[in-house]
Length: 87
Image 1 (cartoon, one colour):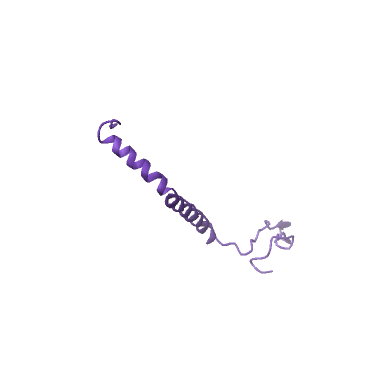
Image 2 (cartoon, rainbow, N blue to C red; image 1 turned 120 degrees about the vertical axis):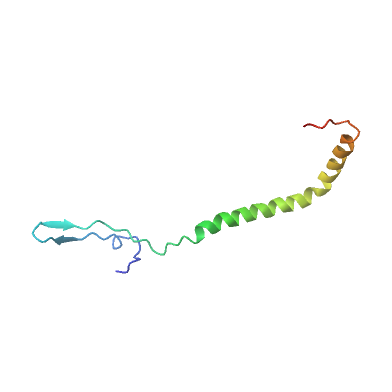
């Protein structure tokens, strides 16, 4: 059996053997996962964050024509004192 046997009844090894004068001894079952790789673990959150950032940037560009006049309106009312500055 290969060291990376699939998780199946053959992959769970339990063997009973004769001990030297102590009777029967059973080995502990050993799980042998197949092809486990940790490389994808940090890659998935990075890809998810990148996808979210792309959506936010696209949204900023789409909303720029709406936000720019609102910003200019607020700044023009802030200068004469219509809107008080908050410290």
